[in-house]
Image (cartoon, rainbow, N blue to C red):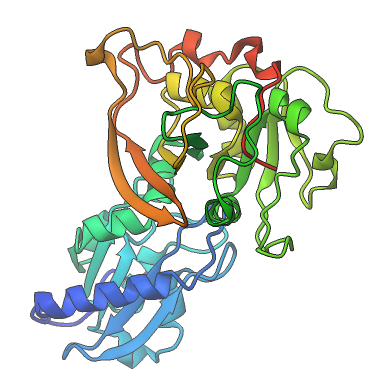
Length: 378
């Protein structure tokens, strides 16, 4: 095993402006890779001691070379010795389906490594320490804010060791998810509904309660403008104790249905994590959305707001256990987007319930998930 990646003194650091420009390019490379369930999208650029681009690479999916190895494979040994690697995520220190990237950089004789986001995964972390111990000059946190935003879902899931949970709902301007008679299709317009399908495709799984299945008989597929199935489909997941009818449209989904009769939401997420699912799109109506929010198990909200007033008591969110203003769940508005006549508000959850993120009383979805509840979805 090589522990001396270079001979003599380390080359001088490259200009910060060059490193930042290269890091942004590495992020564009990362975006070329698939949003696989387990692995993050990572890009890497190898620079000469003079700052010239020697090679670039990105991760193409589970089982394929990681970004650093992909870039190194395009160079001869004499080209990599003394070179600089710019990578969007801290090089891994874990032997899985591929060897550790940190050791690959050491063996290649890389003299300097710049990375953006720190790896929160306890299994793969430690690459920086391994590189430093081998004499490689390492600088972390380059454009870290931009990288954290780019990998927000994956980093959150790795840190929490559970799938990232996106809660979606559509509502009128006065916060109603349905009219007094229960009708909810369609509150929003076609542009907003198509955006929902794109979000389904961008998540590993889509989750609803049995009440929604019984009320709406949804297909829970991701479809294009013409109704065609998109290439990426979320795995359908249902929580609830009532049986799903044999002729339900869910049984025709491209992926096999996963159903839980357990009312332990954290336990459900833990099992999905073990199955390799890293992101969940929650479309289960007010009851399921409220259960996840009350349990502190929601990471991001996608709220589609239509320019209409419905009145009544069919709120988009029900009881969250908030009895006073100081106990309100705090959010950060990440983005506001116009979709036809509707507005999409993307918000991040900033805190968890004061009683702790996994309060068992609030974690228990109770039997409410089996109650019929209509929502804007198919």
